[in-house]
View 1 (cartoon, rainbow, N blue to C red):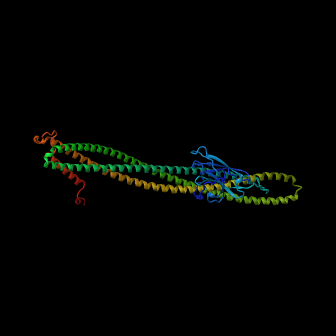
View 2 (cartoon, helix red, strand yellow):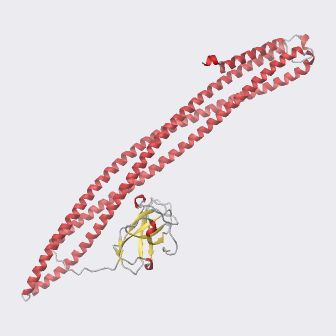
View 3 (spheres, helix red, strand yellow):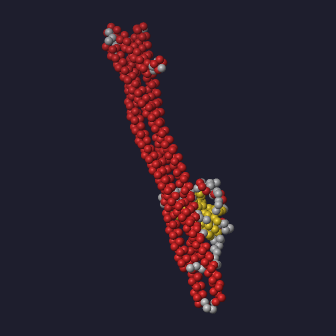
Length: 505
C-alpha cells in the first residue's frame, strides 16, 4: 500500500539521533526514468527487529523529520522475525506516486515508533542523456586512468572491510551492555529477598520478646497466689487443683519455647547460607567490573582504528584532487588536438586514408573514456557514502563510550551500597544471635527453677499437711522461698538487660 491510502507513523526525530546502519539499501541507481515503477532492495541486519507498522519512504535530500516523506510503502515482515542472519527484502513504488521533478531523493526505512533505521544514497528522477562531445585521448592516459580506478576499487574494498569490522564491534558492545544490565537486575532482586528475610527475622524476635514478657507476668501471678494461699487455708484443695493445671500449662509453654529455639537455630543457619550467597554475588560483581575494564580497552582500540580510517579518507581525498588536476590537463590536451585537427582538414586529399583510421581509433577510445568517467563518478559517490557512514559510526562510538562510562559509575555506586547493606545485615544478625543466646540462657534458668519447685513441693511437705493430696502441697513454705528466688533472679536479669540510668551514663 502506498502513502496516499494511509498515514504512516512519524516523529520529529532529528538525523543525529537515528541508527542508519540497521537497514542497508542495495543496488540503488544513480537516477530512475520517470513514468515507470521502481523496485527498492534493502537488507535487514540482525540489529533490528521488524514490526508490522514499519515502512519505507522516499524523502527529498535535506529532510529534517519523518513527516516530510513524499510517498511510502509498508515494509513486509520477513518469514523469521527472530533471526541471527541478515535478510534481503524488496518493495515496489508505483509510478503514479513518484515525484515529478529532478531534485535529489533517497530511500529511508522508518520503524513503528517513527525512528529512521536506514537511508540510501541520493538519486534523481530524470531521463537518460547522451553526451555528444567528441573526446579524444591517448592510449597511455587510458591505461593510467585504469590503474587509478583499480587503486580506488582496492581502497573501496578496504574501507568496506573496515566498516564491517566497526559494525560488528558496535553490536558486540551493545550485547555486553545488555548483559551488564541483566546482572544488575538480578542483584537488585537478591537484595530485596534479603530485606524480606531480615524483616521476618525481626518479627520473630519481637514475638519472642512478647512471649518472654508473658512468662514473667505469669511468674509474678504465681508468687502472688502463693502469698495469698497462706492466709486462706480453707480453700487449699480448690487452689491446689488450679495450681496443678497452671503448672501443666507452663510445661506446655516451655515445650513451645524449646520448639521456637530450634526454629531460631534453623533460621540462623538459613541466614548464614544467604550471607554466603551474597558474598559470592559480590565476587561476581568484582569480576564484572574487570570485564568492564576490558571493554574500555576495546573501546580505545576502536578509537585508534577510527583515527586510521580518517587518515585513509584524507589520503583518498588528496588522490581525488590529483585526479581532477589530471582531468584538466587531459581537457587542455584534447583542445590542442581539436585545433590540430582543424588545421589538418585543409589538406584533406593527402590524409583521407589516415583520417579514416584515426576516426575509428578515436571512436574506440571515446567509448572507453566514457565508461571510465562513469566508473570514476560512481566511485566518487561511493566514497561520499563511505564518509557519511564513517561519520555516523563515530557518533555511535561516542554515544557508546558515554553510556558505558555512565553505566560503570552506576555499577560502582550500587556495589558500594550493596557492601554497606551487607555490613548492616551482618550487624543485625549478630545482635539477633546475642539476644537469642540471652533468651536461651534465661529459659534454661527458668526450667531449672520450675523443676526444683516441683521436686521440693513433692518431697519436702510433711504428711500432716498433705492430707489426701496425691502430689503434695505446692504452696508449702519451701516452694514459696524458691519462687522468691526465681523472682530475684528475674529482677537481676532485668537489671542486666536494662541497666539503671546511672549505669547507662
